[in-house]
Amino acid sequence: MNQLEICLIISTLTIISYAWGKINMGTTAMLSMVAFVLTGCIDAKDALDNFANPNTVMMLSMFVVAAGFNRTKFVRICAHSVNSMSKSSLIKIMFGYIIITVILSQFIQSSMVVFGIMAPMLIASCDELGISPSKVMFPLAIASVSTLGALPLGSGATVFAELNGYLEANAYTSFTVGLMDPMKARLPMIIVSVIYCIFFATKFSPDKPSVELIKMESKKEGEKTLSLFKERAGYIIFILVTLGLVFQKQLGIDTWLICFLGAIMMVITGVLSEQEAIDSVPWWMGFLFVGSLTMGDALTATGAGETIGGVIAKYVGGLGNPYLIGFVFFIVPFLLTQFMMNRSVMTIFIPIAILACKSLGANPVGIIILVQSACLSSFMTPMATPTIPMSMGAGGYDVKDIFKQSIVPAILLCIVSIGWIMTVFPMFP
Image (cartoon, rainbow, N blue to C red; front, side):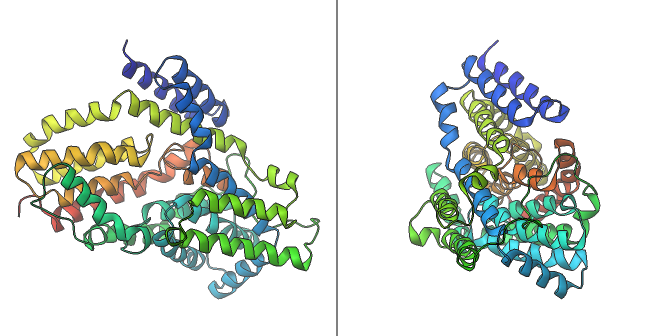
């Protein structure tokens, strides 16, 4: 049995354990990591490095920042204002929060951070109206993930240059990606995601949490009221962290460091005590994410992506129909990115897509944007992106809840992406 086969067996058993639900997901993730190391699928040092991964630090830091923000009256004031303007209509409430989420997703490079900013206020709105967080957290996560960097603003303005870099690296410069092409390709996805999350997603969400909630909502009765200084410090720190993340490139500071500094300042200013800061961190979620990173690294190191990509490259030319080719180059990366880092999947499949188009003399622009779109649509498993474990904790979901809520938006995004992109960017003009 080779390393690839061993890796796939461990990955399959891990996924089964997540779905089974009898073992805590954090524990499963750590057992999985140990198995990958002991079987040689990944080096021990590489596995340990995932504990210091910037996304791990950023995710856990955002929980502390959000906990400090939630101690202030600002969250409840914002939530009450939204509820008043929406006249307590859940659809109108979702409209406001989803639109703001889409806007933030164009300027902040992490869907996890966008979710961390918006979730406390949405939970507070629902808390005031007696609505369970389980109705709204996953729709918010879908909007955070599926619309990230879709417009040529902020990080989205560099997407065309990155894709042209792939074309140059693979010596296929007869075609180029324009500045507006990624937006032109992904705009229907944004529209479909927004409409679905506002009007339909809550209909598929569970009425009650399936597991214990991670508290992200505003402070409860009986908690000590903050002094005026601490009150102001809480929302000033939160606002500065948000602005820092929006202007991260201009500041030249890593996103994880901005979140980490925000978490430290919540403690230094006394908004949270040290114990409150520690208690606000869902450590099992950190273990889950580290385990997910390790699985993705193991799949990459053992060549799972390259093996699958090689099979596709061999047979895709015989499909003939551009829409069938587009379907293959969307669905395979889409499925892989539920278990591997999207950046790794893009690194594997965009060059394969370019070389396949080169051999056919076809225009690769639509195909490579399609691959990118597939890789940025990861929301079906807790391994897909740290945003999903965050939504699971905040909404009280188990793996089955996530999968059930993912099916409809996944099918919609698949149909819309392939149909639109392969029509607007035809392989054979």
